[in-house]
Amino acid sequence: MAKILIIGYGDIGSTLAQNLLNDGHQVSAIKRTEQTNDTSVKIIQLDVSKAEEVEAFKFNVDQIVYILSPNGRDISGYQAVFEQGVDHVLSACKKQCPEVSITFVSSTRVYGQQQGEWLDETSPTEPTDQRGKILLAAENKFLAFNDQTSLVRFSGIYGRSNYFLNQLKAGEAIQKEPPYYTNRIHRDDCIAVLCFIINKKINGEAMVGVYLATDHEPATRWQVACYLAEIYGMDGPKPLTLDEMAKANKRLQNKRLTAAGYVFKYKTYQQGYKATIDEQA
Image 1 (cartoon, rainbow, N blue to C red):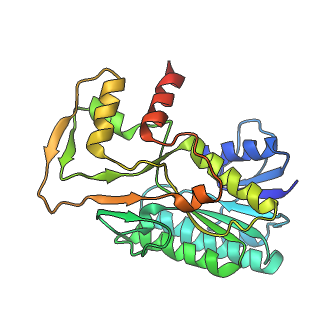
Image 2: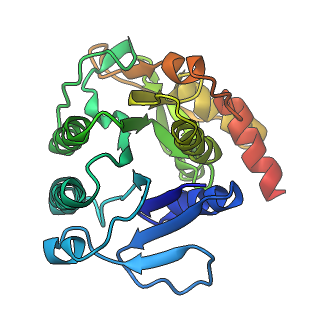
Image 3: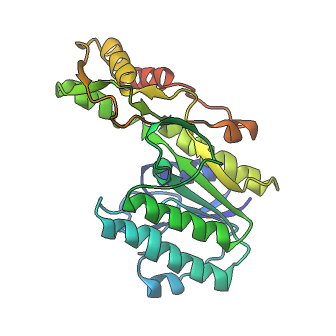
């Protein structure tokens, strides 16, 4: 059994906490707002952007999972979570538990490539927007903290919300040419990946460094939209053709994660979206 602290108790964090409890671990969680639902997880209401609150907290744990999301899309929200919050947590950990094992949940936003390139964990990280730069700086702080840190870069998470389906229902045109590549991971695999890494580390295996968490099949927006239209019995999407120099995004690989032994529940977007429909039936 390990003592695990989850910083961030949203959809992914709360389900992760319950899964870790089921694995026999002692789990607590930090949440910005008051917890109203009954839960067997010990919830601490705390704002990591406030130094005095973090300094007063006792980090008596074996592992920390930092999975906070910004409270809004403005830059100040990103800074509160990934600049101030990270600085405050690492400062407290340096004083109280410098050898603690940390898993930081990041995003593939740290990659700036936009011409359909195939990328992995060794590819250059040169984000083009401020949010990506803030995330990358946070990654580097965690990696520099100690040699027990894991970074997990999730691609687009789906499973309870469906961006493409909403576009189809709204009758929006979907980019067909040039191809615009998309990468995704089902929320169930997000949670399972984190459990996999945490339990591996508890068992003494070196799951440190950077891991890309994305399914096996990058696909274009057009491919995904056509598949959703088919399985939902809707009219096909309206094609959108842009200039041949338009952005094509990137294609991501998960070889490091699968080489470590992780087996995806949903290897492709077809499997994941089909399962979502079956759950709704």
